[in-house]
Length: 96
Image (cartoon, rainbow, N blue to C red; front, side, top):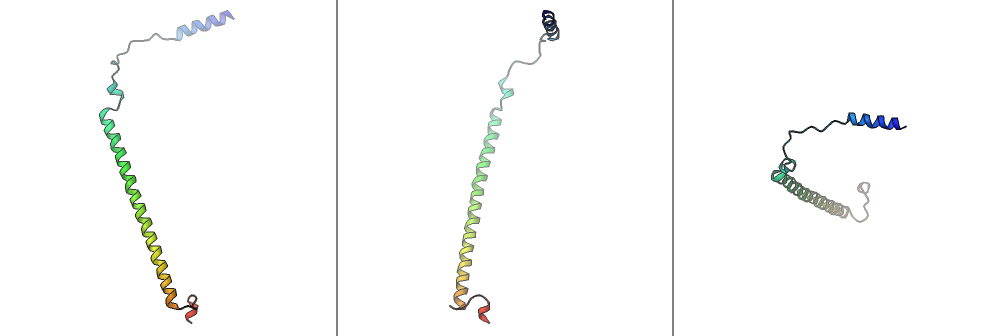
């Protein structure tokens, strides 16, 4: 058993490479952060999204109001048509 552990440790010691010096420059926070330009672009996207939400809300409200007005006009028109036919008239068959 000791020979198996010794062999495994020897094998791991041989496989582990020695670190080589890199030619990478020192850490520069400007290369890993978005910076001012990224902030401005993100802010612009956010402002455009808010403006689109406001515009869509206005359009949906406008469509809903037009539908309500159309319903009221249709109801008034139906009431006026029913009043014109007379009190005992029911539908189109009453005119015959």
